[in-house]
Image 1 (cartoon, rainbow, N blue to C red):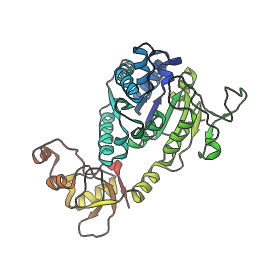
Image 2: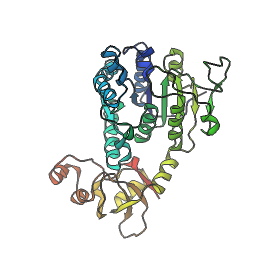
Image 3: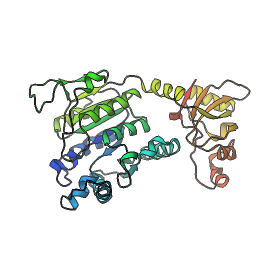
Length: 367
């Protein structure tokens, strides 16, 4: 079965592939996955890597120390995170960047936009972002908890087309294949309902925090935002070769809406507007006809006291009905300073190097 067409993917790799059988960090499975990612990027695709393994790496460095309390796990994560990143970075010829996200980075609009801008710029520069949860400071009440769900959040964050979850399981089955060897593989799931969730078992790894249930949770989050998900075995060379050919060797979880319609619905109904921008005729044409970003140079009036990350309505000069809605890249006060000005003047006017756009085209929908 062919994969859906995609240009940007989030690839999640589980701890069991990085530290097999609960042991030390190993390139046994990482080499093949790195080869897959490198080939996809050479083909013009964009990839964000979400990698588990920091706690496992820290535990291995201390000779298998088992810390169950939160401070012990935080210490193990702090110790192992540099080793985990280094293990990946040395497998790629180009530059890689370490990005640590906390739960607040995903639920706070301002931090969400800042994280999104960072990842967007890294991709533009041809850098491979390697993402993990910031486990060294996270506590149970304020953490995502597992990297399957973190990967789904990152897929939404970067407007990915595809979420690829690689682990020690090769697909979703009609029953647990470890207990029922004859269980059939489910090649495609159209919707994740209660019957599908009932097929999920517990965690199957000695070092991971997730099992099939967290993979289904992640796939459901992605599907609701128009992102398809594939679950496949990352330790199987034939599976990796199939993915490189654009084929699905595991289970494909279909998106329940298109990316555009899902984001449009989210921005229409989930985001309350905190202000308004009036823009000139040239900027109106650029947004309507070319799908361009809104530049501060085209802004003629800023209304409201919004902050960066808040939603704003966009109106043409002389009109009272908004024709677009988007997420502001600047606080209202700063946008007033640079409205109608070219980007070369931003540092002098603001005292810092700000984004070139008032609203990025990925964060704007026409009404």
